[in-house]
Amino acid sequence: MAITKTHSIKSTLNLAIQYICNPAKTDGKLLVSSFACLPETADIEFEWTRRQAIDKGNSLGRHIIQSFSPEDNITPEQAHEIGMKLAEQVLGGKYEFVLSTHTDKGHVHNHIIFNSVSFVDYKKYHSNKYTYRNIRKASDRLCEEYGLSVIAENSNKGQSYFEHTAYEKNSTYKSQLKQKIDTAIKRSTDFEDFLLRMELAGYEVKRGKYISFRSQGQQRFMRLKTLGERYTEKAITDRIKKQRTMSKQNKSISLIIDIQNCIKAQESKGYEHWAKINNLSPSRKNRQKKEAKNGMNRSIS
Image 1 (cartoon, rainbow, N blue to C red):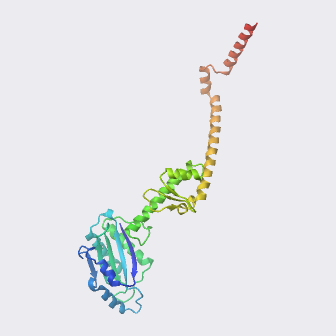
Image 2: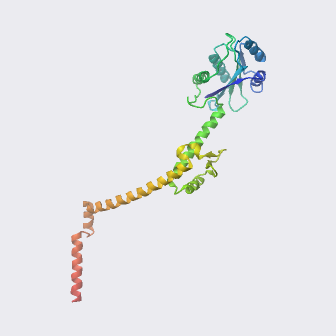
Image 3: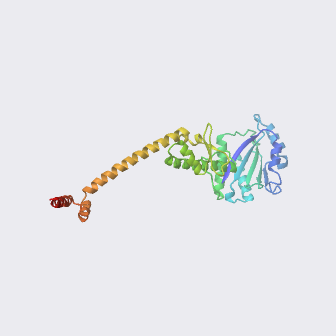
């Protein structure tokens, strides 16, 4: 999987190019390539092209970063090849660019710095949501071509790999917190009892203007109100009250059902059979009572 983001370079273009071509980051510059320019003089060549443009804009160049997931186990050479194809596809051979692949961090990533003006027609590059989408789709197609995973279409755009990972982790914390809250609500008698149950579930509770929770391994507290309408303090209190009311109603209904079942049982043939076996038929009971009473009268007289 690859995450892409892009931004404009409005000053110190030469320093940006020097940074991405750093030998310590690019295996001694073995992972540095360029198109229609030399990496060492790219900033000068970019500027010469920009001077030919009528409307050059205020951008000296643009920077694309393509970050790969460590889980894909991509080699630096493969990443560099993908980066070159990405630049060729999105720039169409009309813009000078310098490509480098960095290997100095926990994930391999590409840097592409390209001129903001085309050397073919001297028109400036227009960066907008459509051009970004084109970059994203081209990157995804290349990832599929190389057997790499692809991020879902609705994922946040313009993120680095670690930004995306943090986003996913935050979403996981939210999901887990919601599940724990839902469970605690079902067992709570009031809001204070709810907070106690959340603590027992392993959450640190921060009281104040807003109630916040933090689980083990989570750096920041998460406010209840950020979880949605059903998870505000008022909504949780209302849900607890509703849960208790429903619980009482269910107990009453269960008691009525038990009583009705008992009456029905007494009227059933099975109950009649059981009564006969245990000498509990009404006629026999009455007969036994009469006999006992007569016996007592005879004894008295």
